[in-house]
Image (cartoon, rainbow, N blue to C red; front, side, top):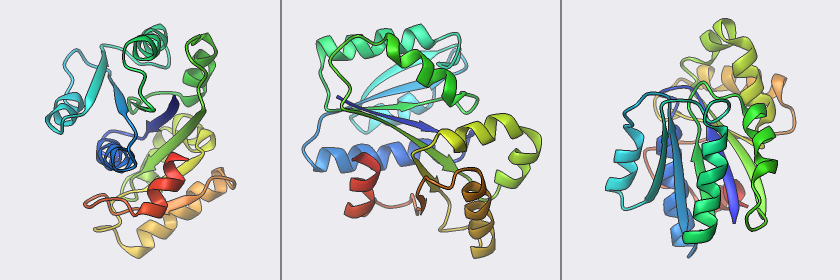
Length: 196
């Protein structure tokens, strides 16, 4: 079972990316489960994903990096015993701290995770403001990422996109930065890179 964590602030494009990742994985013949973390009592993203015939597990009324960390591990155990998907994609809430989520994963005792990857989605319109207002949280999400995805490239200016790329690279020099139009399917090579 492979685990892919997707984070980014509200409206950054997490759900759009997850839909594209799930489509690409299913095209590759892989079974997919999605865990959605909604901070409020009522989820929205899970309903959108279920309409697309995706296997969705919802964690609500808290954040998986703190109050729902145990629920995340329990859900992974349930998936391991009942469904055994090839790929589990976790949509973390926009306020999730990646370090706290990664610290909870050793408590998972099911089948060995083949890999754990972290993808952070960056909105080129809002990243400069978020870096000013929520520096530690935004910086942590970028630092922990294995892959960085700049969304909204279909509507953002090239200056906004390159400013976002430069800011992200200054925080995390190791993670590849992908400029992605999430209005259509992912290219085969990008899907393979994000899911391998």
